[in-house]
Length: 339
Ligand SMILES: [Zn+2]
Image (cartoon, rainbow, N blue to C red; front, side, top):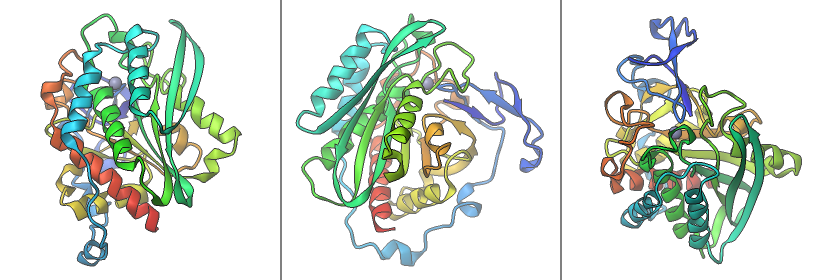
C-alpha cells in the first residue's frame, strides 16, 4: 500500500492538501507501498471529531457476548507463515504458503481465483484464495488480507511478519471461529489476496493490488459485487504497539461502526488516533461503490522504520494485537448483520 500524508523522511511531493490542518503539502510514501505519517500530520484524534463516539446506550444495547478469538493460535500461524521465508509472487515459498492456507481450510467452501499477470519484470502466477461461510441473510461481508511479500525485497531476508503474515494469520483464526457455525447474518467470505505489493517501484494504479483488481472486476462481471455489503481489509495489524489509522480513502460510516465495535470491547484507544490517506487492496472495491475500510497501522516502529525492511520480524508483534483486531472485526460483522 501507499499513503499520502506528511511524514518526516523519504517520499515525494504528490498531493497538495491545502486546507487540511494547515498542511500545504503532503508527501507520498510507498508503503506496501506506503509509509507513515509519523509525527507530521497531527490531525487531532479522529474519535473526537470524525467519529461519533459510541454512546452508553449503544454499548449496552447489544446483549451478544463478545466474539471469541484464539490469539495464541493466531500467533502460531504468524510464526509458521514467516518460517517459510520470503514469499514474493512467483517463488517456491509463495506456493508453500498457498498450500498452507489451503490445508487450513480443508472441508470449507474454498474457491481460487488464479490467473497470470504480465508485468514489467516478467509473467507471474497470481492466486486469490476465497473461503466462504454462508449466512442466513442475503449479502456478503468480505474480510481480506494479502499474503505475498514485497517483490523488490525478494533477494533479502525480508519475511514480512507484520506486512502480510500477521493479517493472513488473523484470517485463518477468523476462519476457525466461523467454521461449522450457523451464521444468522450475512455470509462472510475470507479473502487471502495476492500480489498486493508493487512489483517494481514506484507504486502506481496499474502496478499494485494485482490480485484484488482482478477479483473485483471478476465479481463485477459475474454480478457478485452487488451482494457485497462491506469490504474489510486487514494490513499490518500485528504490531505490539497497535495504533490503527483512520483512513480518508475508506468509507466513513463503516469506520464509525468499527470504532463503535472497538468501543464496545474496550479497545477504542487502539483505533483512529491518527488519520492517513491510504491506497491499498480496498481501492478496487471503493471504486466500485462498495463500503470499505482498511484496518492498518503505519506506525510500525518509530517513524515506521520497520516497514519494508528485514526488521519486520515476529519479535515486533503481539498476540494481543491480533486479538484486538480479530475481535473488533468479528464484532463489526455482528453489528453489520444488525444494520
Ligand atoms: Zn508491504
